[in-house]
Image 1 (cartoon, one colour):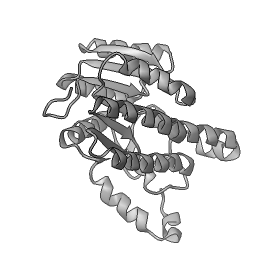
Image 2 (cartoon, one colour):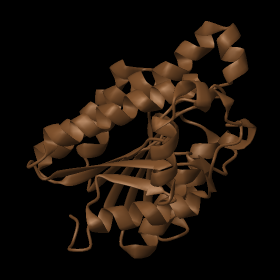
Image 3 (tube, rainbow, N blue to C red):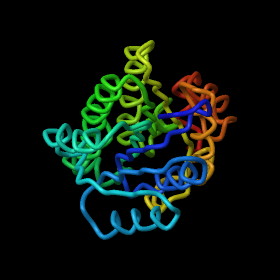
Image 4 (cartoon, one colour):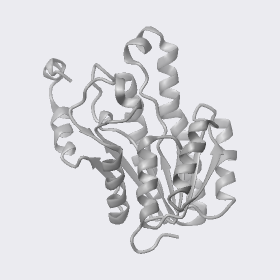
Length: 251
């Protein structure tokens, strides 16, 4: 159970090799989290991530999870919740895709959309139902500042994040008053291995800075968290620019 700080003792990470998720797990372990489930495709990287958290004193476990196989999500998440209460679910999986290639090969674009949106809707709803059934917990979803307005350079990725962002806000409204806290996290460009090949964005941050913002959001029971906070004002301006002007910006 959470205490007055709002921080979890048990954490389920969907996307167990995500650099942002692991930075968040490490930060929460340093505070009070004791049990961490890392859900992802079975791999050496997933096991290494769990080993790293065990070295910090956590009871870290792994569970097989594939965002592209929604039929398996209920079984995978059910296995975790059957072991005991989960105070926080962090939905952190996603792929950036390759914009130029995916425009030429639509099957790649579909895979990006299925991972970033369809898979997240499935996992998000199953996690939300489980949290609601136990009567407490937080669902934290990693969205993106890209959800606010798609750029020419990343509109396939951004469209999936826009859908996920809207879905999560609606889910938060649906769960209001149930004891379940839903929080959307919108980082700008994050310096990770996954993002190394992406086009430049108006801002840059680190996984550790996102983790710090997640912790603060949990303590405040925020519904939307921007990383960095100043990015909110920037995206508000960009969102309202006329399209002819927006197209001319070097974004």
